[in-house]
Image 1 (cartoon, one colour):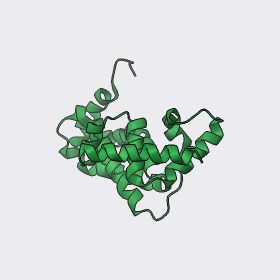
Image 2: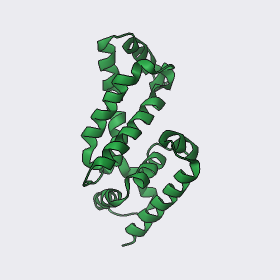
Image 3: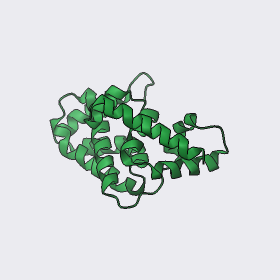
Length: 178
């Protein structure tokens, strides 16, 4: 793929073809977004990542015809994925840790430590956080979203996002200091 082509530009023709009923284009499109969807679901629904990914891809499949702008595809997929991952995580009775690769950016919040030990400790800390706090932390640290974008995505007031993010960071830091 040409380095100048953005992922959403490359996906646009597949989106259009899939919207017209092209099953092969739909298959290619779902294959294209599966790693991205998995990257979002893993830290939000660590105990049920596979279920969250599946539910997200089903939501994409069912809702794709309603997407008006194919260039908005990735933002639309992110919104669906986060909502599905949060829904799956909430219904989960017990949660298990997130994958280390998915929380690597959270290291900026922490002092330097051995990488393997750090990964395990981050997974443990994230697993113990409430899903709402974990979600905003992931959206900020992995996706780089600001409070306004998170508020729109989660359909909550911006102040709610700010307070959740503040509590998430505080909880994370306190738990980290044993």
